[in-house]
Length: 213
Image 1: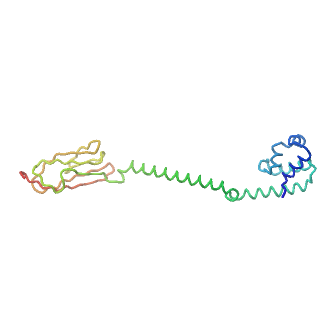
Image 2: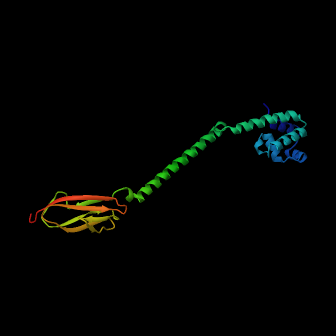
Image 3: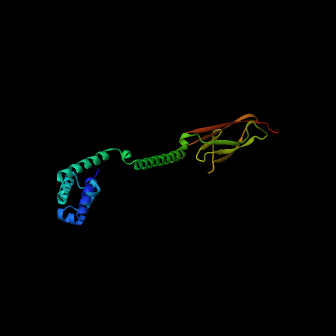
């Protein structure tokens, strides 16, 4: 089916006319005349102007005005109906690209959110977890011959550490060491570490002390 723009272009060329000549005679801008010939009605300033341009163009070329307007009206309405449809129906490739971009953006947001979540957990891990606490000496259930016992180990550098209720300093790496004096017999050494959020870890180390053993 021949389009109105194609009909105008063929008649213009048959008469040996240029777009510039028609523009000068009809006072219609050249870009609008080219848009009509291409069927690119979206480039026209509006439907009322478009009807007037088509009418004057048809009249200038000596084509039936009402028939030309009927063809234009049908094409114009078809284009409006197509534009109402979702893009996926009119341009599947563009729709696929859009879906790809949305999917990639969602994936990026997911990873960024994951990184932020891990960062928050790392920063506030003290509020969520008990401080790490490891007593290296004395060994559990060991038998010692000295009344002076070295209690050593490792914990969170920011934790408050106590051995049998007495506070013990912790270095920047979390290491601690404390000399305590015990009585002979079965002894339970109580080591506690508490962070600033009140989370507590506790190790009770049972030993046997036998002087001269």
